[in-house]
Image (cartoon, rainbow, N blue to C red; front, side, top):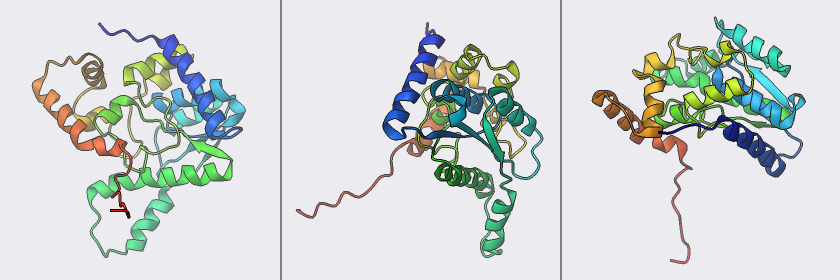
Amino acid sequence: MYKFDVKKATDGCIAWIQDWFEKNGKGCNAIIGISGGKDSSVVAALCCRALGKERVFGVLMPDGEQCDIDYSHDLCEFLEIENIVVDIHPAVAGVYEALGGRIEISEQSRINLPPRIRMTTLYAISQSKNGRVANTCNLSEDWVGYSTRYGDSAGDFGPISRLTVAEVKEMGRYLGLPEKFIEKAPSDGLSGKTDEDKLGFTYAMLDKYIREGVIDDEEKKAKIDRLHVINKFKLETLPVYEFDPAE
């Protein structure tokens, strides 16, 4: 049976962050979008351990009113990191206004535009604060494509990209984060639904399938397999035509 070594994973991740910044941004700051949930909380805590809290900058990005934004404020206060609140609603509304009704905006576009505006915001701040943007997606989300291409799936470095939801939670506890951040129901902060509501299966079921290949619901197994196949492109580098002038 698979057993997660939380100390090995946490210590290794901290060392990896230090090494990555040494090679790709010596003296730079870690810029992190803060939702107050387990992923951004753990990534922020890891970066504080690796770089020092003075080099970690949190960005809170509500789309207008956000009922759970107190979690984000509380996390920044707990970690004692500098932070800023940027309301992305005017930017999102501005894109729709610029389109001026000339095309019908699909529901999927409405879901994915705010995360892409958020990532644009993170990079604007990063380039203004000598930063590198942290990707806060975990393996479970990435496995089934529960991320927005060029939105939350983007970033310069991904500390938890190869860790499942269950493993991220264990790391959070090992790092001493309060339970409310670790067990906050995962959601995009935009739709009013939890991740599991939208996916149709639990992360516990998905994590067990990823690490042990075990799942006792054939219908959900088929859905997970289908999502994994059709969304793999999100994690791959841009395919390009390799022109050879010599041929």
